[in-house]
Picture 1: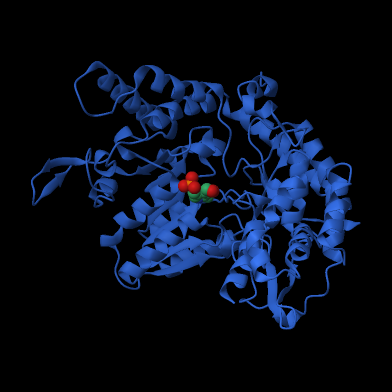
Picture 2: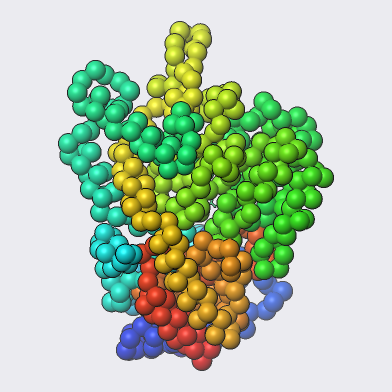
Length: 135
Length: 405
Ligand SMILES: Cc1ncc(COP(=O)(O)O)c(C=O)c1O
């Protein structure tokens, strides 16, 4: 898996929206397999028209977040890959002082941030932040 | 002679770009754009004529009231009913809630309310609440796997269930099907049911003659008919309408108020509590004039041209599955693309400048009946062109090949 900087570069370097989305969907395809039994109602992120599942845990030895996820749509899954790469391996305090939304703004993916959008990037980001606050 | 470019010229928004492409707006089922005369009228009201209605003896108020009431007459003419049978609301949703509330005293436990699986949530949920209040039971006319109702079976359901209320759409928002409501209303009346027609999708497209249809209630939203948002209409046959208890209470709708008791005005005033959307109603009058300015035969012929092009082109794309009745249709096509999520398809179409809707379209029971989670919906209006359809088909092919890489 690429880290967030590599992912950022891989999208930012694309010419034209088709190439950009091709790369985003490729990132989605490269996400590690999300086990079917984990696709429970509790794991669903509400507020997304597409289905999005997250599984979150803390790595006991390092205190860092381990999060995996999946979506039934190609584009949201690709966007999810960006979010997961951004938050994975961060400690709780780092999660609170950084914001993946700025990455989306810089990559000119702001249309995916609109509250009416079915793909609810905000909802996914909030689910991760809430998890890190509650545990 | 029908000239689509002359019509497009009345809709400035149609010439804007989206993501650096010309806008192709195919989400007219959600809301239509507004012609200049509507926009200008709303503006003119606030610039020149603003005042509250039905109050005050001053010039502006009298003028605003006259304009506001004049639109009720225009609408009455359009629908072939009496103006006192028309109530202004904020939309089809409010109209349906008002009716479902107003019919509460007429229902007994186990009475049946018959709807169809095609209904918008706005024509389902208010009836469910009415059923909860009264002990009535909701039944639905079924659709087949393409989303069409079986006429004979629907008639049999009406005859066997003997519903107290039959509330169905004139045309489906999710699939575009036009329902055979003339004969369904006749069947429903034969067993003494109250008939409610959700005309949100049919008002502008079909221009129903309510006197001929003979339904008891009919509702629609101005914003789906080239008018402003926040304005809706409710037609009710006068006696039935006037018998219903008020829905909201306050100013405008009362006859006499003491601290302990009030008596209400007669319909329609009884149902128009508070200050209405005056500018919106007045501007909606222009929308009706816009619709009426295009002869119905020309309107239908143009839409059929565009719709038939759309359907025949879609049928050449192997991965596409179409739903709904493709013959009796208001110009809406709902489809899925094999192995692709509707949101992916629509997100990429958006980058081509194409506006379509995805999801369940407030039609969850319909989607359940079709055993899908949602569709992509392209809905055309009078200003859409065959060239736009060509653009849409080109984009759709492009999007599918990108998704299939
Ligand atoms: C068939 C139908 N009924 C009711 C409604 C509700 O209309 P509104 O949201 O304008 O109140 C709609 C709108 O989508 C509709 O298509």
